[in-house]
Image (cartoon, rainbow, N blue to C red; front, top):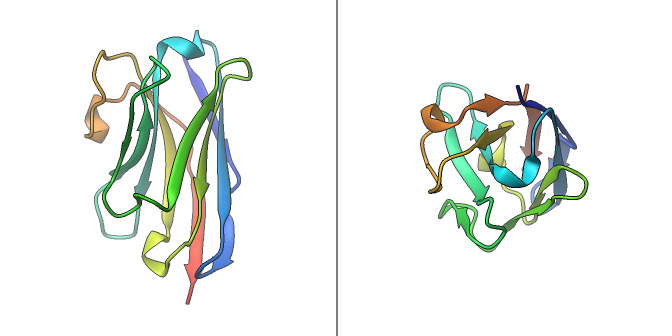
Amino acid sequence: QVQLVESGGGSVQAGGSLRLSCAASGTTFSSYTMAWFRQAPGKERELVASSHWNGVTTYYADSVKGRFTISRDNAKNTVYLQMNSLRPEDTAVYYCAADRAIIIHTTAGRYDFWGQGTQVTVSS
């Protein structure tokens, strides 16, 4: 069983930055593709960014390209999401997820393990 614990959420003004962290335990972290999803009220959970277990391949939603960066530290079993130039539309609960698939999946239903989520609120 994989346990994922997110941290780093909070409130920030538009244009500001936040760094989310997700610590994993109970697994060989380097064998998992790690992803960040977000869900705003009344909306579906959407993939924001993903880091393949190969350590090379990443995926970003078009809405965050150039502003968000996903990174992972396999020695610390941790994945990060650096969020810059935040916008009010980035407001959501952000979830960390893990998947052992060979390819990066973009749908939430394909991910095996989830964290509890952390709130990010961006004010204008």
